Length: 207
Image (tube, rainbow, N blue to C red; front, side, top):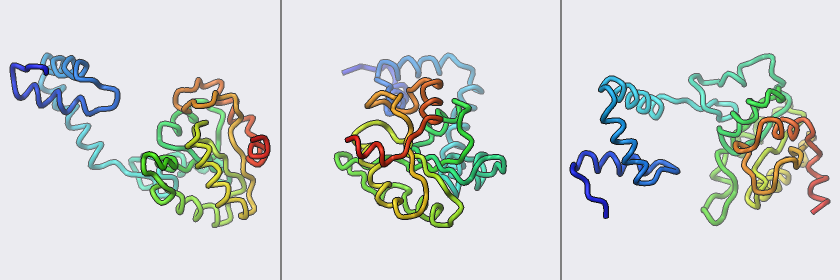
């Protein structure tokens, strides 16, 4: 058990170690680094994190993070609002946007179906997606979820929900390796996967 010369330092390490991918050794280095920083810098960091947690908005249309009620993508009249790209979370929106190859809008599910983790369809933003599609302005939905068992399960669930709504259902091309997350895929590969998307039914029939 690590011994700390200060309870304040130990408390800071405990909190920093709660962040994903941060072990206690890294948390200790971060805490000691903050001690060397000017107080104003540490205060600014703390203030920005508190504002992020308390004041951030989620777009009423797509559930993307936003400073306003409507995110910049959904509010942009130059985007094709007839195409919705369904992604797992906000990191995937950023990944697809970085390719510069997609001009439609998004829908952030907030996760994927995972019985092991206790995540079911009701825990995701699926009802709001169906409402958007049923409004009649959408002509294509792109399934851009991770190429994992959980991602495929969610894709098939959405396919069953959307199949009778008179829209084109596509999925990103499998230039992305099985098991890969979108956020870790290079921009060129991801961009080509978006451009070369295929009918979702063709994916089902090959399984």
